[in-house]
Image (cartoon, helix red, strand yellow):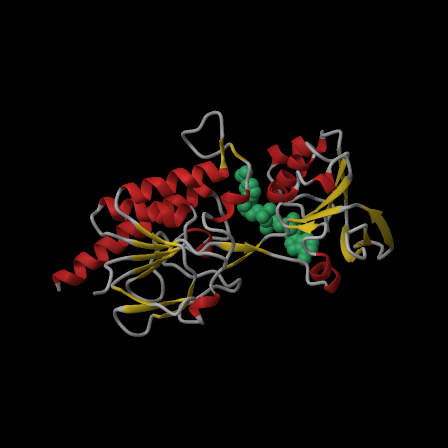
Length: 315
Ligand code: NDP
């Protein structure tokens, strides 16, 4: 028997969709993923304090917020599977999904809420030293003994980079932010915190050309984007925070995507180019990308899936 609704993704969007669908007695099945597209729970699992999710005036830790949402989804009747979906067939109905362990699942409607993954610098030295001083998650790795009281670098000029830099000041003796332009992309409030922080120095107009180190990162070769001059910066840790790519590989081109690869949805809706398939959260939003907007669109997707199934049954 096909499920009435299947949800792929366990970030704020997928879990909010699950809460709404479960409360509407749709008995949703949710694939929370395992390895693909980051850890189950999504990007908030690698965030520390979340200060802007409504309802938590003192802030809440990202993993705690996700644990609460998961518990709420299960409590209302969501079945959760810790499996990656590797392939989908959206051209035949009911839709079919194949997991990485080879199981197939059939569903009458589908919500894709697979989010986006952190981008990485395409350098051989980056691959070689990944996990040996290079990371994409200051919250996960910043407190490691190797980084304590040492000089560290964060690459990027967005909110994530600044948040990571601020987090690292708890452990590091100094944090450099390496940004390719002379202006930050991050919000004004974050800029103010960073620009006035005594442990943080911004290196403007710089890109990383090479990561140096035998078994552990020891320095970075930087190139000035204005003058092309190169310089060496001694750091034992480098944290990349250069944006994200949407997790849509498993769709194999079956849904329309925009020029950046994000799933196209009908404006004001979560409807995709295939009827009965809805997309919510960061996988279809590169503009706002907030936990609260992801959760909001998850609610929309569950509501639209429910209506679509009712209309279909009524035909
Ligand atoms: P962004 O896309 O906002 O920023 C990415 C940064 O990386 C930019 O400064 C960009 O430079 C730089 N960059 C991209 N590619 C490269 C490259 N190849 N080499 C060097 N630098 C590069 O991503 P974020 O992850 O920072 O933020 C994503 C969204 O999440 C944003 O909307 C942000 O506001 C939000 N966010 C909100 C938080 C909060 O509210 N607490 C916390 C974290 C994120 P350039 O500026 O030149 O393009």
